[in-house]
Amino acid sequence: DAKTTQPPSMDCAEGRAANLPCNHSTISGNEYVYWYRQIHSQGPQYIIHGLKNNETNEMASLIITEDRKSSTLILPHATLRDTAVYYCIVRVGGAAGNKLTFGGGTRVLVKP
Amino acid sequence: GAGVSQTPSNKVTEKGKYVELRCDPISGHTALYWYRQSLGQGPEFLIYFQGTGAADDSGLPNDRFFAVRPEGSVSTLKIQRTERGDSAVYLCASSLTYGISSGANVLTFGAGSRLTVL
Image (cartoon, rainbow over all chains, first blue to last red):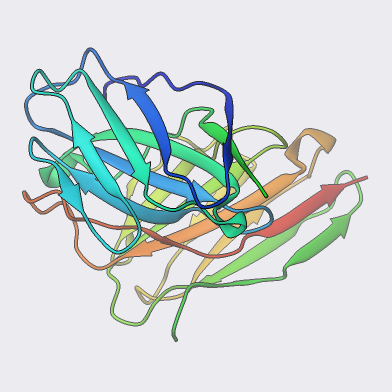
């Protein structure tokens, strides 16, 4: 699986949008971009995933650049409960795509 | 159940002892995964099962670690002759579908079992 690069930490203000970048310059055509987050003392929680197109669900939006070498997770209105470590993961589809490889993630602190 | 259940939530043991950690996945999930997470690090893959068989055990650090899933549901991670370096949170996850081409293979994690080896 391709390696990802994320900033180690970032702060954001409560109520504002949080934009979390991820670089995955070696991504292959069959690799998906997944985002998980881990709130303190909990297991990781799935947020969203995408292949080429931008995606949105009730938690967040995922913007993938046209060349697919980077992506941005957007939390539209950050709350204090969004404080967590956010992991960007690229992962193949199909039978080989079951093993998630976590990096260090971005530690996001939402401040009042 | 509604989520992935892991027991015990906390385990303190002495160096050299044997430990078992249990994972009860979401009902109907065919794939089950074990990860280990040390303080300040991301989760590290250990092993995953498709049904009863271990499809990939490449992450198990050595032969002191073993996992089983005899009936394709509950899994047990077994650690023999524990060492202080085994101290970590052991996470279990399950997923509904094994390797579909759409990529929508979402893993649901439990809260983990914190192991402390004194």
